[in-house]
Image (cartoon, rainbow, N blue to C red):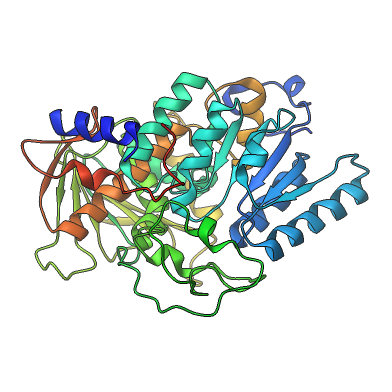
Length: 441
């Protein structure tokens, strides 16, 4: 057990240029940004889209990393082709070791899109090496890691963006502004719809995939035989199901839940805070029904509604990707939930015009999640899903899974990020890290 992990348990137990998308009031003169040299860690399905997106924003990719040589060599070929077509004089180096990217002084920022159990270790290493970080959601695999990442960003002064890109989609921002400005009255509860919590991995062993460093894929997770469900053979065009298993992810609670609980936090104005109680479902075998309760009495329930549904004393707001609805005083004012309805853009735009023209609360407006990160790397201002946002939303996910995994009601101090009132076990906040892949001390 590393010293940092021991100290955490002890404490817990005792107590290129970016596009013209200008956040924080940047002027057009700030739009011509310095070329950002980047390294990419994890070259699977998600990273393919990120890689193309960053390069379209004129980031210069100089290294790619994956423990699967087929995937990393394919990513290198994609970058080399792009650089050649755009006349970019930069060599892209392929590596199977993320440490090679962290060690390079000529790399300004990294993009991390590994399986969840590998998010925090290279994130912390990159921050300590003076690099800015774009890391996919959930930001961390457990609560100890989330607290550590917050601390490291504070110590290093680096920029970190979490890939919770729903905050850069306008239907979610308008929905949260409606809630924050009291259009549906006093919020009473939020219901979020996503899939099941994680389960222990019980997959059988298979013949090893050629050119895959399986030991490094497992990293800090327990040693087990290779299975292609966890790391599909060669190139693939789907999201692998490692996320289903506790050792590597947290089921859909940390997958889609990381998106929808993030929006719930935003709409409730709870960034930088969180719930004070976790209430498991009555049936210990249930896969929905866990409740996060806040100090003001508002609850977030893992239920069967639309993606995120805010319920207030005067109405409700429903929102998910491409869908939006507003009901006030028993009347549906605007709705785009089916093909028969008007477009979602028209509905949230009309709602914004009617109810938010003179709104007192205006939330951070980002129209490009990656563009926002690149602008903030230049300006050194906080991006829309910084470490406080990303870690806070991840902590909500992990607390909800704790409710499912251990079937106990627990009390939580969101300021200290620890269990209180004699509830919970500090060991639940972290994991055993398999050497030599220990968490950085």
